[in-house]
Amino acid sequence: MLAVILILIFGVLFVIALVAVGAGSLLLELRRTTPPGSVPDAALPAAETPLLLRQQQLSSISVWHQLLERFDFVEILKLRIAEAGLKWSVGRLSFMMLLAGSMAAAIPFVMDWAPAVTAPLTALAAATAPYLFILRRRRKRFQRIEEQFPDALDSLSRALRAGHPFSAGMYLVGHEAPEPLGQEIRRTCDEWKLGLDSRVALENLARRIPLLEIRLFVAAVTLQSRFGGKLNEILEELARTIRDSIALRGDVKAISAQGRMTGTVLTILPIVLAGIMFVTAPAYIGVLLVHPYGKYLIIAAIASLALGHFTIQRIVNVKV
Image (cartoon, rainbow, N blue to C red; front, side, top):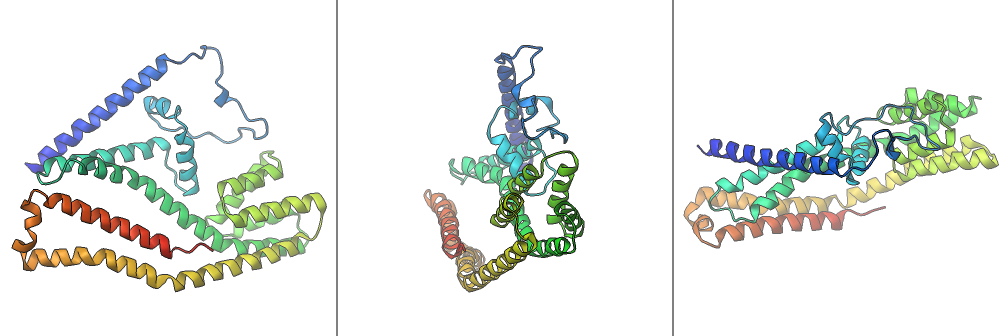
């Protein structure tokens, strides 16, 4: 019976959300003032970067696509998805967030002891979970690229020393470097083949991978093309500097590992103790479930644990 009620509440909330989206899209469509024969500014090609590659739609559902393209945060979501190396669309991500939030909001309604404030909090936490997953994938992907980049610079330096031009060296490195770095370098080479200027293609590489090491590489290549110099020696020194920086961050991470482990233990320990007390002395801790203020104490304890864990992790996360 509980499962049936939960499914019905979730279905009603999801239908209401879809109706709201459709009504908003219809209102926005009626407000459009673009003449039928005109071309929107967003569809025109940029002055410097031609539209040589196929543009990905925000969603395969036309109504949802028309609604999403009117918000500024869509570009941020599209950029984060691309940086995470996922093939998702913005429409798929937004639907996942809507589904997760609706399901999480329906759960507290069938729990008599849960206070009303838990519904929006759980809905917000569940709705942000897909976006947090993308941020985690993005961080791990950038970490792999940073670890692979010094070896790629050494390979490019050896190719230049052997007499290859810079474009040919980048082509060789793009096919020899492991993923995901090889994919990004091959994309830069493809942009060159399609007629894009080399400086703009390198700037696009630095824009797709917003790492300091990539920006230093692009700046070194740009300065060398303007003022000359031995690019292979510059790349070798840059690779050595990046390796030293990675080693230093590894040492700092190893030193702060005890603090991170302490924060994890302090977060898990109250939950384990509460589970043990529920088994050994259910009448003692069961007062929190029947007392009028018990549910508020449980919510406050969970919020305190989350806040304390976040604070400890921020303290021990030393930026180098």
